[in-house]
Length: 400
Image 1: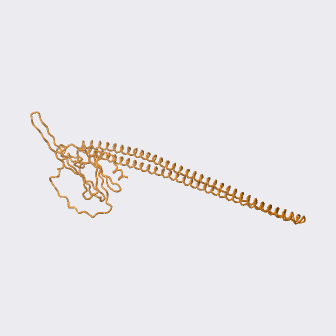
Image 2 (image 1 turned 90 degrees about the vertical axis):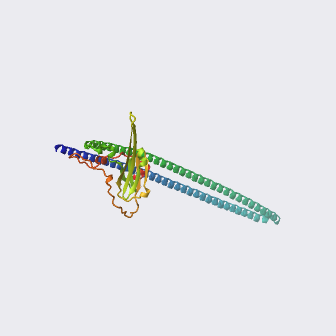
Image 3 (image 1 turned 90 degrees about the horizontal axis):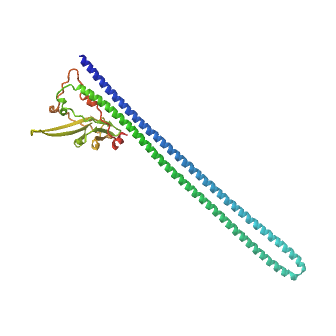
């Protein structure tokens, strides 16, 4: 009885150690996932800050260019108005001078006429004719000078306007080129920052994925080692359950729930992948398959021995929510089976199923354990966790 008590105590301690190892592994996996999410959040904040800084810089540069253009245009318009005012002033000055000269000439000749009137009527006509000719000549000369000055002023005004127009055009072109340069630099900087962010994000994801894989492998090795050790200690009976042909076949799959569906992972050897079946039965995911083996042996005395073995197995995994079994998909990534089952968007009608019929020929008799040793059925196998399969594109998308 003392030996049985010690054995039960050791079994309980082993089971407690296995549970603590599972809790520790789950905690480490959760911490690694939290670190990945935090790194992604920080990277998004940095990208938004860079984008806002570049947008604000472009807006300030555009306002500055527009203000510079308006100031230059205002100065050009003021210069043109000033030139027009000076031209009008010069024209008025020339007209006033012409009028003064004309008045002086009129006064001069009027005085001469008055003086010559006393000399005689003979000289009056000649002087009047000479005065008339002189007046016409001076008037024509003054008119020609006025027209020449007006043409010169108009040409100068046109040249000044053309110069200001050319200057405004060059300023507009330089502003446009500077804006295009700033826009190109901004786009290049944004593309470079995006590439750097993607590279950093990929490196962080790879590092965290490697950390998670390493933690899963270490936890799986520890749990498998402990399970194998205590499983060998419990197998103290010698009957047909020790024969591999009669042992229970476990798929050892992992079912995970995502936001929009379920993911199922299981390690299946390549020579058994063609015989694997995956179906949905109500609220259960059923994974099964068949095995067939045929061996022949020829002895030295001419005898021939042939053994043919055939097995069929299936395992049921309960689903907590209704699923869309029509869109069930499966694929193989190396030695791993990956099954994707999307959730239903609406609640389906309840399915009435008849109770399963009892088939005595399919039941396996319970083995006879030694006194004091009563483990739970397939406890060692239940604690074994499959190795973490490589993440495919579809599984990564669902788990995110």
